[in-house]
Amino acid sequence: MIPSPEQMLSKLIRLNTVNPPGNEFKVARYLQEIFTTAGVSSEIIEGEKGRANFIARIGSGTKKLLFLSHADVVPAGDDWDFDPFGGEIAAGMVFGRGALDCKGLLAPQAYAFLKLARDAAALNGTLIFAATADEEKGGLHGVQYLLKNCPEKIRADFAVNEGGEGPRRVNGRQIYFIQVGEKGTAWSKLQATGHSCHGSVPALGDNAVLKMARALVALGDYRPEIKFIPEVRFLLEELLRVKGLVEPLSEANVDQLLDKFRERSFAESLRAMTRMTVSPNTVAGGSKTNIVPDACTANVDIRILPGQDQNYVLDAINSCIGEGITMEIGNFVAPTFSSAKTDPYRLLVSTTQKLAGEGVPCLPHISTGATDSRYLREAGIPAYGIGHMAPEADPELGATIHGRNERIDIASLHFRAEFLKALAKGYLS
Ligand SMILES: [Zn+2]
Figure 1 (cartoon, protein in one colour):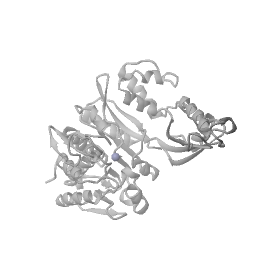
Figure 2 (cartoon, helix red, strand yellow; figure 1 turned 180 degrees about the vertical axis):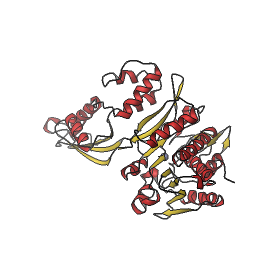
Figure 3 (cartoon, protein in one colour; figure 1 turned 30 degrees about the vertical axis):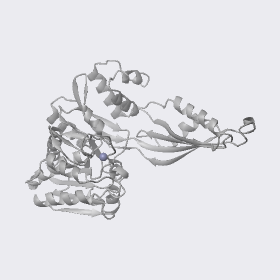
């Protein structure tokens, strides 16, 4: 007997894999138990003790499809209306940390995989299932470890991973999304230097905090160049069409058009797909009220689009912050991208439409944050993110990811399982 996706998810939520420390071996052991019962062999690869990666494969042949998810979760925090690790099933929902991110994908992937395993001989190719460790802390013990030490275990023609937006209702029409790229990160440190003196005669000094303040105001006023990568242009044009806005999209009018979307979080994430974003988020300077400060630092969260790089960031920010401030990029993660002009992408779209309804728009998007897909893409494995939910699912559920009261409806778990089964059959046939 293969447990249902909701039974699997309930059990997975009860296995506490908060990262740190992770303890993903708990999930790996449980999966091994149900896979073995279903007659499917599997392996557990631990880069470090307890940080288990669970992998199984069925079928044979040159075509390869990877179902990827991660077994760790972020801490729950306080103020939940239910036990975050209770895995309660009630009123058509499954409740708890990981219900969406990412055990709510892991469970339907495992379910679809085990269903397909019953007739693996019918597959013209290999289906790989991987539930990996450590995604929430950067994937060092998970996907990064596998790609470094045994890439053949997860190498595939393409991967289906988390990261896609959940469906949204626009002008009464349900729209589905496939994630094709992720913005990059260029966390930067700004440093202002001056010289100190007694605060009673400030003109004798050179106030570094004031210099930084001017630079930060300039960053706040800075309007990054708008750039439509083709997939985002297509996404926006289709959304405007569904919304009934006929005005042709341009760099000059995109902001006014986005203002017409009632759902603020959606409009702002669309806006962030059209430009670099710059947000100064910490600042520190000065030591005492009566000393003019000679140093001030600020940390700026900068996110860049596919096609932009470190030089782009340095040129843009340096031209804005003015003289006397130095800038250094500390943490750089390149943006990644998988083409939407491929057979796998087209299959993802047609499979979505088969389940959600013929003619339902299914559009590409890029994420403002990153998942393990970035490592796959860097290793030459195209990756596509899905966040599919059943057509009737509450769109508010998505807001519980990394927040309180995380939960998913059972119908969406089954919708995902059916989608994944149909996708694998479609590709490996
Ligand atoms: Zn995740």
